[in-house]
Picture 1 (cartoon, rainbow, N blue to C red):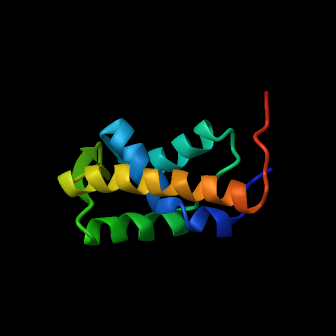
Picture 2 (cartoon, rainbow, N blue to C red; picture 1 turned 180 degrees about the vertical axis):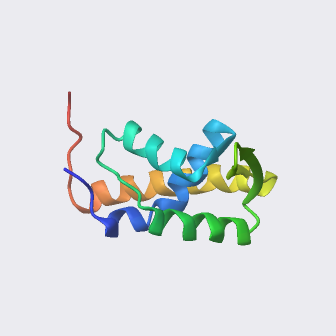
Picture 3 (cartoon, rainbow, N blue to C red; picture 1 turned 120 degrees about the horizontal axis):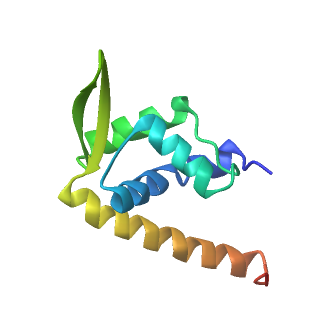
Amino acid sequence: MIYSSELIKGTLKTIVLKLLADNKKMYGYEITQRVKELTLDKIQITEGALYPTLHALEADGLVTTQAEYIGKRVRKYYTLSPTGKSKAKEKVSELADFMDTMRFLLDIKPTTA
């Protein structure tokens, strides 16, 4: 099952901030592939969703960019700013609380593996 873009859209900033917090610096394609890998293909982020999110995070001062030349190509790496590091923790905490609230609201019992 692949999750709908509607569900992903509301969590994309949090996903990107958390990945950058865990990995120090990443480029766009690397982010999309890491998400696919970590979620066993349940979450697939398109470039059309990722890059506007990265640009918004950069505009908000939460990420910084650094260009590196890989042969003749330029690869843009994203890293968290100091503000981004604290915002990442805040957003992850907010999402965890939201998920707990949704479990309660929807009366979803924890599943056991």
